[in-house]
Image (cartoon, rainbow, N blue to C red):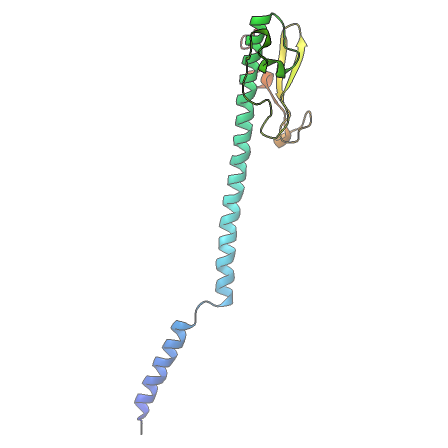
Length: 154
């Protein structure tokens, strides 16, 4: 017969084997899933914020480019264009602008005549509605330049 000592040794080995093969408990798995969710949520918010900032940067850059194209149009034709689409035309010494006239949110940029040769180029922003605050704020050339006449002499 097997001695008492041998039986204990076999029982300990079986218990050790069961413990090492046991895997993760439900609580351990829930903690891991929670941690992954928290990290993923933080990264997701940061990525979305940077994506929005990139859209705003693109719109600001395009507003500046369009304003420069309008300035060139005015120099060539001694008047403001009737619309931004006129900048793309080969008539009147153009084209003065060859890129798209649609902002990153899918709305067309707007040319506002302010009297005489003064103008503004505007993107309506995320909400595609005039005005707005925060994420929905309009992007205006005059706002970007502070309405400084030296930067926009026409």
